[in-house]
Image (cartoon, rainbow, N blue to C red; front, side, top):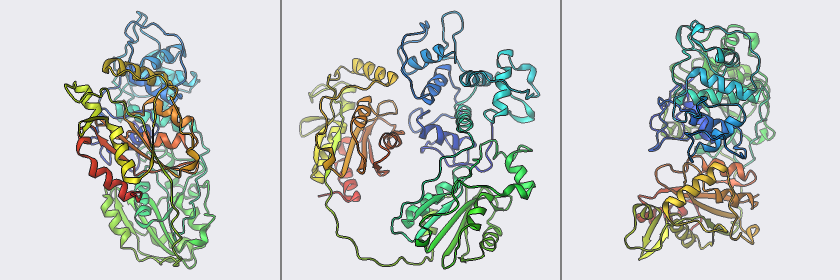
Length: 557
């Protein structure tokens, strides 16, 4: 698989994804895009083999989870998370069965099979020969697919120019292949960077990040200093293959060897509100002992006169060297200070401590505006499986909490405490057709809804949502996602201009990627990253924790 020039930060807090793992960036990508989630207990299981069912499910999600009618009638496809994906894959000639009526749902998938699947999904394009040392071991049905995957930086070989076609693809490899394929599909035109929103801050953090290390540090610095932030995005983005410095002839190797190739065009190299910033903190990875050259055009094209400029870098082993001095000479203006190098595994506390100790110009003092009273609403979906506090089954106990003899759903209890702490209005999200309370029936229905991306009808909707400035939104985590009724709720309401604060209850998965899902469903709202997620195992004693959280947010009455 492709190796990155700089190791990435671990994704999603998985305990088995090291900060400097070659696949960490890919894990972050597939998790944040809702393509893959963990395997439970905050683990990603990167070395576990991937099954055919898993792969078609990932591709089905990548395709946007389209509606599927009919069934391919595979004898081993039961009603489960992969059912719709398997039928979709068969109907679209992406993955077929074995010819004996079986799909092979639990069979591990080989590297050559992954290449073949992605190639068929792409439409079986022609490809020039890209021979590996073990080319003769590649099955004839996968030969063109492997050539195509290699030529487009989707799947590369292992050591000694081997492809190892018949070895099983691990979850780490699949995450990397899917990320590489997505980058290949995106082409060369990146989404233009969003200019920093003027916030009154006089400090700007500017950064270029090749594989998330510098981005992580930049975000921590900006958070510590309440600074604005601006990412430098090349017009021709760097792919994982581009960054593979161990491959002769890769893009970074060519640019390193030929200085004329280092004039990297940026999607934006100036900041509209540049004059408001007295302090500019510039971050970059170290490439061959100097600052990664995509930062050069930003430094050249801006006037740093009167500004305090502080560089920082990230690297696995190299020091900062003369990178800051060379950038200062390139700029020709500005008061450039001594910079700081952060190693790949630098802790958040280390970064924050450095940022807090910087000698920055103070912002101009302006009178504090009069606080505006904000109207708050608490909305929630909760599915307690019983209202009887006696003789509960394990499943019923998992979904409920008993407070003063009253049985409440876990998320319902959180909503009540938030409402009491804020003095907010409260609204319960309910389906028009009530969910069953029998555990087995409820699980089957909820799984089917998720597999079909079904949108349950709402019993009622918020009548005066436009009156509220802040909306707390609560839900349980069902198989790494929100219940589908939450999609109905978001799609039927406009949260433009409002602040959404998520809260949820779970059995071990936390928020999963649901916060970013909400941000995608409500792009014109501000979705707080400081939501509250509480395990069903600790909800009974979580009252003070919830109250403290509301107080920290500043919404307590």
